[in-house]
Every structure is written in structure tokens, then in C-alpha cells.
Image (cartoon, rainbow, N blue to C red; front, side, top):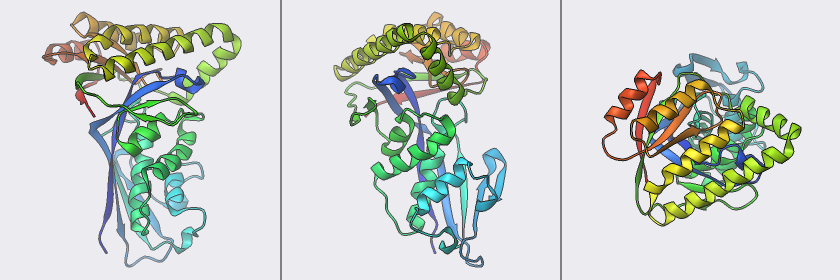
Length: 314
């Protein structure tokens, strides 16, 4: 029996993180130079229901039902099997998960793992799921990671397209007539989207007027960014990134280490820079033009543990 595999990219949020949870739009794009792969192979010597998981990147080697009930990998596997099928009747198989997407970095690692498992295992079981179903199932697993996910990560990694997303509305694929370059820098502190989302929620309860103003301002920035992208004017996104970062600081989800990298990127010639993702660690992104070597070197000296340059296109 052949192996069944699925590869899913990472993602970054260009504009709109956190505000998107409160009904404002966001723009997110896949990062195809990073990916998660799941490979499912039959275990011809095993008995039905024997599903073994190997994820060497996180030192995981376990049978499905040895994983805790709320383990995201277990949840993704059961989602792929479906509620109408008894897991004990599934042909014995092994699932190998590998990933170049750093976890807890705002790059969609959790969603990518879930989507890759769901795609590969459903194919192994003879089901070809649509992008929409993969996205919906991944969203349900994302609740374990983030509590109240925005819906961005699962949508981007399932459809593998740039999107303009507003909760409650159908997402829109975002055409990018003029490609542009984004530099991603990891501050070295793992992000915690679940804690960041909860912090923003509590703060918004304590000071609703202030936080509503911030959310609306971020939403306006995102709308302006969409128009610039569609008009083929990505070089003008820089000031909007800077403004977006200021509002994310006001939401209290930045850190001195993140701010230092943002300032370093700007001082070295980036057109704009901001946090990307939940914050409290993880990555910053910078809009760059031309040679990026000097900016990467400066970011490394400023504390970035990893830098990556990626092209944003349709």
C-alpha cells in the first residue's frame, strides 16, 4: 500500500492581528519556504486501530490513545477519521510528522501540523477532503492551541493563498499584482498566542472604549493596506506597518526584544516593521527592498535567533 503525504506551508499575518478577533479585517499570506509534512504509511503487521505517531521535531513517539485527550495531534487524527467512524476500525498505520516551521512563533505551526495530518490521513482512508473542510477541521483543533482562534491560520494553510479575512464574512483571496519581499526575524522568545489573546480580552473588558478605538484603528490600517496591495503599490505599506506596530504595543502584547528588532530593521533601511502574530514573543516582519544581507546581519546582532526572507505573491 502506498504512503500518503501532505505538505502545508507556514503563514504570517501582514496586518490585523488581535483586532481580527473583534470583527476587524486582517491580511495573511502563506510562507511557502516553510512547511509541515505528514506521511501516513500502512502497518501491515498491526491490528486495526493501531495508529502510531512519530514527530521527531518535538521528540514525540506514541500510540494515538497514549496521547492526552486534549493533545492537538490526537485531535487532528480523530478529526481526519471523522465522528462516524470508529477509530478502532482504522487500518493500522504510522504517521510521521516533520516541520521546518518553528513552533510558538506566529508562523502557523499548529495549524500546519493539523492540516497536514488531516489531509494525509483522510487520503489514506480513501477520503479526499475539500480545502473548506480541511480548514474547518483545522479550526476546531486550533481551539486547543489558542482558545479563541481568529480563523486566519487554518484558512491560509488550508487554501495556501493570500487572504483578506474578516470574521463572519466569506474570506477573499487577495490578488498581488506586484510581488514584494518580507523579512521575518525570530526574537528568540517563544510566543504564546493563547495568553496574548486572553490578555487582550481581559484588558478590553477593563477599558472597552480604549480597546475598541485600537481595534477600529487597526482595521482601518488593514483596509488601506489591502487597497495598496491591489493597486500594485506594496512599497507604500511600510508606514502602515509602523502604525500597526504602535497599536499592537498599545494592546500590551509586545516585548522589549520585539521592539528592539522592529527598531533595528527600520534603522537599517526597512520600509516598515511590526510584530506578526500573537506577540509576547515570536517574530517581527519587515518590508524590505533590495539587498537584505545587511538588515539580516544587524538583526542577528540585535538578538534575532533566525531570519528568513520570503517573497509575497499570488
